[in-house]
Length: 248
Image 1 (cartoon, one colour):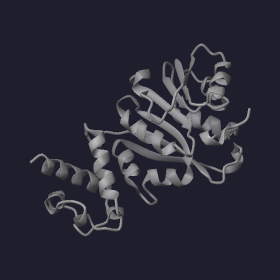
Image 2 (cartoon, one colour):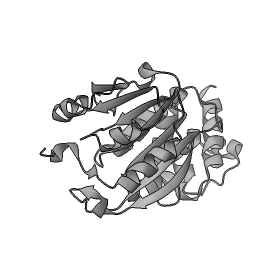
Image 3 (cartoon, helix red, strand yellow):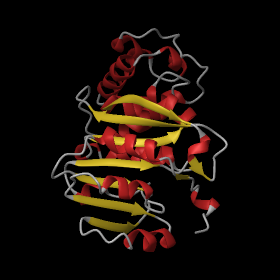
Image 4 (cartoon, helix red, strand yellow):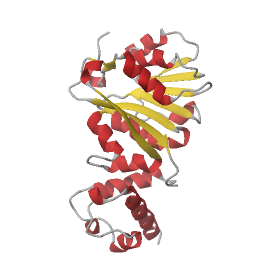
């Protein structure tokens, strides 16, 4: 089958890596799993070897959808949809998400996962290695990294070189595990996202150039600090202070 460049398709063909990804999900009897981007079904078949009760596969490419449906397992349902804006919670309340995410929309799918955190306690994703390192918070942290780590503990599972894909990508990949945590209770995720994107604009500018002085002081953060110097706790303190200030 010819792969479509517009979908950013790179098929994972290493049986060892496929097995490791499935193992990282820790699938138990009765689990409902959602695979994003099933492709030709390599990971799909590996997942179906586990004792899950239901496997939903979200695939945008119609040609791939037909191929996946040919697998013919009664536990499998293939959905032709875009995972960047799909309502994951429509599939259940305790979902395990997994996928070799297309490089061109991987970050958007991760963001959408966070917006559906209430029904996604666990996700295991293959991403471009550079993106994975940023989300982990150990390299060039951006607003999405803070957004993700507010609600999920991010574990770097392993690096995956290009030779394990067809066609081989030009960059390394990595597998991340996202485990939902209880670090923060933020109801309006859209408002929180807008706050983070505002703070991360013009990264080199000090906080005092972006937020009211009263907000920064109440949060106990240094006004001359830049975003790369802040911890997750600092961001949460700033957001809490900002909400109080905005509520006046």
